[in-house]
Structure formats: C-alpha cells, structure tokens
Image 1: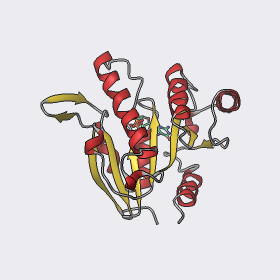
Image 2: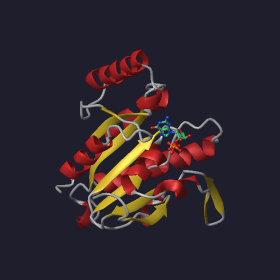
Image 3: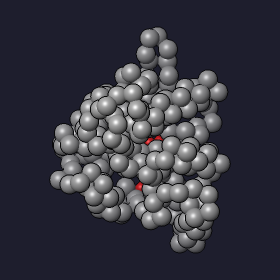
Image 4: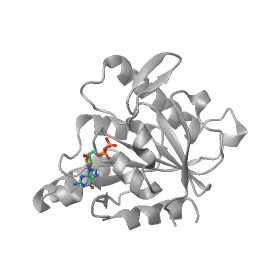
Length: 215
Ligand code: GDP
C-alpha cells in the first residue's frame, strides 16, 4: 500500500511557501541522527527522504542541511511532513532560531490558523516525535514536547533503532518517556518502538497513520 507512491511536493522554510493542499498531514520531528530519514524512507518507499540531507539555499541564504520542512504526498492522499532535525551541535544560534521560527510557523499554519478558511480544520492529524532508544529524552526533546503541548498538537513518541538498544536500556528509556508523558505533557500515551533496519514497529506506525487519516 505505502511503497512507490510518494512524491516530494515542496521544501519550505517560510509559511508562505508551505503547500496550501487540504490533504491530512502526518509530521515527523526529532534530534538530528535519530533515524528520521531512515524511517521516512521506509514509510514512503525508495530513497525519498534523502533530499533532507541536501543544503538548502533560498534567496542566497544558505540554511544548511535538514533545515527545510519537506512535504511529501503519499498516494496523493496523505501529506507526510519531514520537520528539520534539532540539537546538532555544529548548528549556530542563527540557524537554531531559523529552525524554531519555521517549526512554530508550521505548527501555527497547520494546526489552528484562523486566517484562512481552508485551514480552519486541523490538517495536522498526528506528529511523531522520534527519540533514539539508546539515548533517551534529552533536554531539547523535552523543550520540543512542551512546544507541541502548547500548540495542542496530537503527538506520539516513537523510540527508534531498537535493534541496537539493550533490553535494560530500552526499558529504562521507555519508562523515562512514559514518566515525562504522564507528568508533564499531554500526548498519546502509547509509545511505539521501531527499527527501520529490522522493520520492527513499522506496521504499527502505518496503522496509526491510516487510522488518523481515515483510510
Ligand atoms: P536523521 O538524521 O534523523 O535523518 O537520521 P538517519 O535516518 O540519517 O540515521 C542516522 C544514522 O542512524 C544512520 O547511520 C542510519 O543508518 C542509522 N539508523 C537509522 N535507523 C536505524 C535503525 O533502525 N537501526 C539502526 N541500527 N541504525 C539506524
């Protein structure tokens, strides 16, 4: 069902460049290197998400790698949104603030923008927050969780690369996420554990996508 039917619609930094398409959206966010491109490639088929590794230049300003928001149409029915990775140590403060601005603009326009009737209904059906199962939640993950919470986004945590985690490590970080969800933010309580390498948890993620987009 999912493979070979996706195409890149646009790469954008500013809200005026976001597609006006009314398709339901599923977004993905996480720290750099968390395994987001690998998961998106698995869900979209082929090597769709490789473009997120290409430096983006708009109006002669180099935004660096993975700083754009990439929109992919899946089966012409679902918009899969690749949000830029965060927490990469070499990213300057300048670029970090570009990151923050484009994420906030995305959350505002996709979620409850009242300016345009088209956007009145929430297009963002689910946002997956990816957390490396060997690293656990970091300070910036918690900041992002709070930002999502403030914007009332229905988000769900995916623990990635479980094939590389030890049983005790996985349990520890699973409990860490669970505790954060229970105590500090409101999001979907079910935590998905996945490995793009071993195709674990992929079916579960697909089921959630189909469910929230009404397929
Ligand atoms: P991104 O920066 O979040 O897009 O992360 P990538 O998808 O580029 O992955 C970062 C690194 O982790 C790469 O070397 C991948 O091969 C590796 N990786 C991604 N997913 C998995 C996984 O499920 N298992 C393992 N063992 N490695 C993974």
